[in-house]
Length: 265
Image (tube, rainbow, N blue to C red; front, side, top):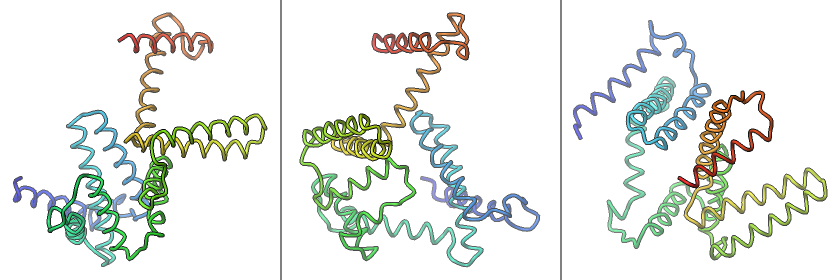
C-alpha cells in the first residue's frame, strides 16, 4: 500500500467535494442535504453489490468510488454544521474495528468464526449500553425485508431462540405451507397475507440454517429470471414471434425449452 498516494487521493477527494459545495461550485451539489444524499447512498451501495456479483473488477473499482464519494459528501455536510468531519469518521471506524477484534489486537483467544461473531455482538451491545433484550431492536428497520428477517432471526439465535437443526426448521416450513394452503382455501386475503409472511420468514430461517442468506438467494433468483426471460424473448424472436404478440402457451413453451437446455448443459 502506497500510504502517501492514498493520503493524497483521499484529501483530493475531500477538497473536490468542498469545491463543489463552495462558492463558484455546482448549484446542484450546493442544494443537497442529508435527506437527498441518502437516496444516492443506497443506490450506489446496490450498484457495488451488482458489480461484485458480476465479478467485474473495473466496475467494482468504479462503483466503490461512487459510494465513497457519497460518504465524503455526507461527512462534508456534517462538517458544515460543525458536527463532525471525514477525519472523525475514519478515526472512529478504525477505533471500532480495533475494539471489535480483540483476538487480533488484544489477548482474546477464539475458537473459530462462530466465537468471533458472538464476541462481536457482545462488544457491540456493550458499546451501545444495551442488554440482551435490546439485541433485536438494534437491527435497522430500513434494511431490505429479507435481509432484516435474516438478521432478526440471527440475533434471536444468539439468545438461544432458534431451531436445533435443519430438520426442525424444514418441518416448520412444511407446517407453515399447510397453514397457507388452509388460508387460501378460506378465501380470506388478510389471513393469506399473514400465513404467507410466516412461510417466508420460515424459509429465511431455513436458508440461514443452510449457511445461506435469503437476500442473496433472492437476488440470484431475480438475476436468473432476467436471464431466462431475455433468452425466452430471443427464442421467440428466432421463431418469428414478437413477444408482445406471443400467447401464454408460446411463452411457456419457450421458457421450458430454455430450462431444459440449461439442465442439459
